[in-house]
Image (cartoon, rainbow, N blue to C red; front, side, top):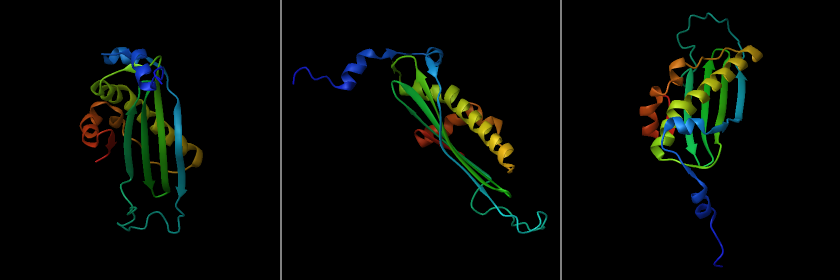
Length: 171
């Protein structure tokens, strides 16, 4: 039919072109939090804590693993953080996201989307994930590795993010 219009064709005309990071940041209307998974696995203490054994570290990986994935659309930008904390008390796995909804559909370059993620979205998401891990520590009385503050700074993600094309992992 001649009067059929694809969603993409119609929405292109309705998108507001944004050229600056400050203008895009001002377009954020809401930031819903998305909890995909939170798992607390407590390790049963069968031996005294001070065993003198140098191999008491968990062999399953680093004490703290963190990965960040970003995506964008004309209606929102999303950051998803996956954090695994391993201590002598157990393991905590957090899969958490934040969506940054725009006041109206936007048209932005991939460079501006990356800049927004690095300057605003990733630091906000990682800081919120760190807060959630602290809540787990307090409510479940379990040791949790702290997310270092510098991981929430934009420059600490820029090189890693480009290598992973949308996904950042702790080296």
